[in-house]
Length: 293
Length: 157
Image (cartoon, rainbow over all chains, first blue to last red; front, side):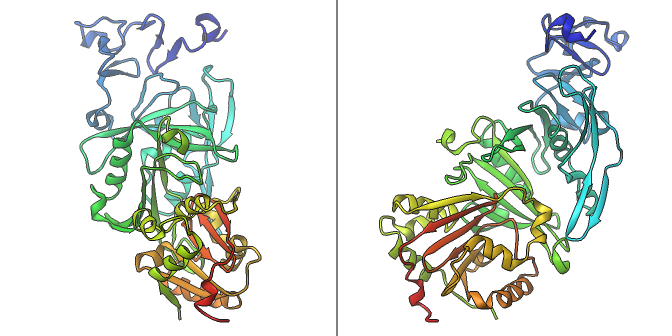
């Protein structure tokens, strides 16, 4: 019998070390670290500090939504599927809901480009989409093959691509040039053509700008503005093109967004360079131009 | 050798087409982009179509030849001079120009000059005799029908 059939859908969340009952805000079993923290309730979630903290896999409190959180967990990220709070200390510790089948990702170099794939399997009863999935994004495999840096965002987006439609994967993206981390929410949404596409969202325009500034080495002023809304420059030896479009696009019906493209030397025809698709971010709830006005 | 005209010239030409908009001010503030052209076309009540190209992802950009790419965007508007605005040209305010029968030579020179594939996930604007065709970096083609571009008066065939 599945948990949801007993407790109701979405009422229990499986952390790595304990099961949490959202209805009473308590874990169902004793904290495995209880002997080290005698002053805490052995059943409490995040030491009852749910305003500023989250629970590390059912073990202990950790301060939330700060750069410190991101640093505490190293080069990892925080995930939350449907507002469940789960910390993943690194991408290899994907929660029970999702598990990789193939590791490392498979990548091949073909004429005219690089392709790759990775398979995941859903285990959690929280979704009806149980089964195996081949991730269509290719980003991680391709970037590794090209020798590019692979970020937590890549993993976050890749995982989000296999989530059920509309369910968000949340994680913290540590910024390189600011002492903070931005909460990113990645989910599969419909584009204007009705196709399922992955989109990354931030909470507000400040975060959106911060993402653009961080990509430009701390400020867009360090880049050259090639035309309104677009900047180009080099940061850490990598040539980048940044679109900072706080007004959105009328004719594509897109709300405020940031796109960060990277120049890939030799990836084009005859050894010439090309710009990649890049990372793209919207403000949650303002992905459409009309909504944004 | 790449041939170009100055940015201000094309702004003046567009002003003759978009009579109800202050083209110079709009371009200075918002740029000469598919967005601003669409805005001015709506203001002028000109017919415009948006065509979404499905399934074109990052890897497939390299699979498309420059000529096929231009053909896809401009359609059958192959007479007269073609004026092209790209991000690369925008930096120096250069509007590249070529005729349709010299398209392959132009693409070859452009790729060598910038050491990049002609087809990129960027914005492209083609100003033709009776149509403005844009490729937006989100895989959209925008076509604006215009009564007469007057651009043909700059260079005679």
